[in-house]
Length: 387
Length: 51
Image 1 (spheres, rainbow over the protein chains, first blue to last red):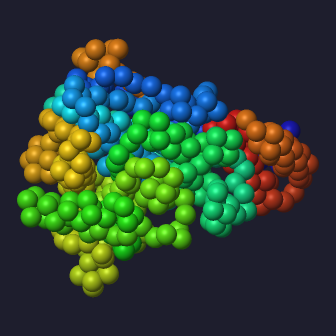
Image 2 (cartoon, helix red, strand yellow):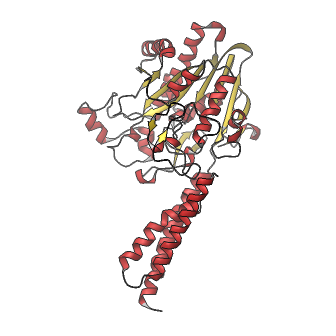
Image 3 (cartoon, each protein chain N blue to C red):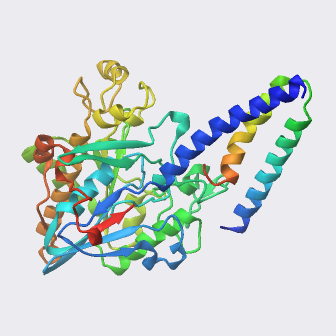
């Protein structure tokens, strides 16, 4: 055997080993199942494909949880992990699923809206594959997903994504972004089908309020806010005033732009009777000028480079050595959602949705997020939904 | 899986096969050998539906 042959075989073995290790980690991440526990308030669980049959059997299909009260009232929809790299959304949704009971009306929760995106990652940005939330019974492990669906499920991307039905030209990546593919169509690209199914759910279930939970960079102007179109602006403003006065944190209200298409806060309002709200909490992890993208940065939101920028007035949110811990973000989301329900109930008593046993901002700050999660090992297996 | 996705998998498999063939045929340039394998890695991960 020549020296060249030995060199080539060694090279191929090294590349095979590196690819094998990386490939195994990617495979494990894509197939890891994080349990979702249906709490006492959950009355039934269906699949999203029931509202769009072409989703059936695809990796984009996902669970839809119904929490139905004894009294008549309205319907509120919570959509979480539209972007799976903004995980405060899913953590908030799971607090509702495990603890909330509904006295009046209905709450519908989709905790993993872009299921494919949650099984994708961003190795080029050094994303951690998982993160863990401490609880009283150990650590609960979640997949850290990506903003867009996996190319394994939606490929190839077009050169330019032409939004349906408006025909706006959007980035090629947005064909895999479930906050650009609203209102969708039943035979379009996979993420358009996900959004179409949600639109059908909103129309068929007569949803009054649809809340899409997100996170945004501290250097991005649209952060720490509620984005609302004209029809939702009154309630959004009241929520801003009430949370500021009663709970001691500030969220701003931004109008939903009319010409920027495909976003939930625009299309849900235009294509249904529901009032949409998009919630943004700051997530320093997503800012570009930070240190390594570690699990600690994700959970604490603490970063010396951002602190330096904050002192120069470059951030759009208050920022100091405390950072922006996950409990602050999740606590804000809980309180804002509860206040939206409260304002809906006051504005339209016949469409009221009354929720109980959900912690508010101060409760989450006091106990931290994991306090509200139950142990899947001791839960009734019939109430545990792997995702 | 859509028709266009299947076509893209076939294109990827063809490109990967060409890279492997070039790697095997390369006799002297070690930089090219490394380059072929670097380019091949993401294609293999896609064909195997891992990444």
